[in-house]
Length: 152
Image (cartoon, rainbow, N blue to C red; front, side):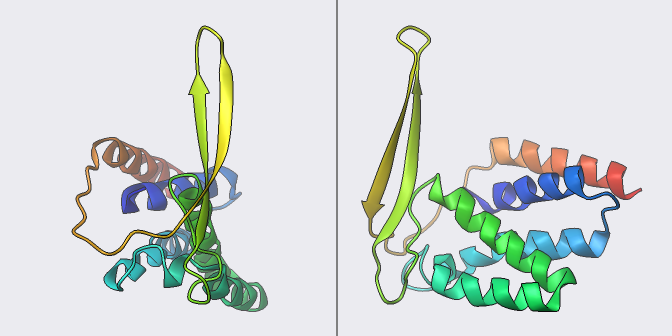
């Protein structure tokens, strides 16, 4: 999942559910939602900031401090939740590099069925990334439009 998708999905959820959305809150949530991908600068992508060992103290601090720190931590949590369905997250990194994810396949329309499979593997080593953002660019534009309407 690319950064535009990670930013757009929790932003749209926030804009849909917040009774009175605020710009600062949306910014904190969005920064939190893309923050975990900074670990791509390390040896492995989906490593340090994709670990529950890093997220849980941030969630605790956010819960205690409330406001923007909590929204940042919730954005971070949304990132890990979304990555769980698009690959693997290593919940105990750096203690263990092993990661888990969930692959869901829908087959049909004839003999319709849904297959779910738990994936277990190690995160990919760092390499050059190529992001194709066609669909996610459209999603980001939609999120921006909704933000303009809701924050007006």
